[in-house]
Image (cartoon, rainbow, N blue to C red; front, side, top):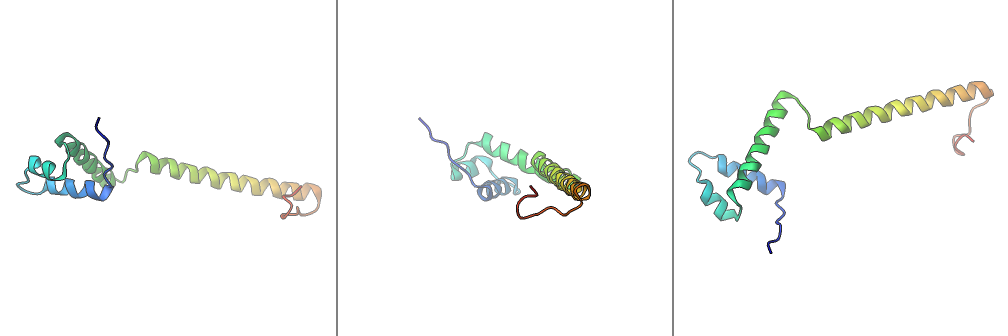
Length: 102
């Protein structure tokens, strides 16, 4: 039974750059690192796609989700401030922030 090997990003980049060098022999590089050539080609494709995305200015799906999450948190905080202000106005007194306003 084979075990899976974890390859840190820095090692993946190193291997991909070696493969992309002029006159690079992919078989020799794979043998030296103990990696199957199909894995190296997958890493190379992902590496190039990431470069394309960066040059086009398109963000990864994770980055888009983080940005949307930040936008929604800001919107929720602003809404909470408006609700607090309305409560203070209706009750005629400021809310006690330390006790949670209750």
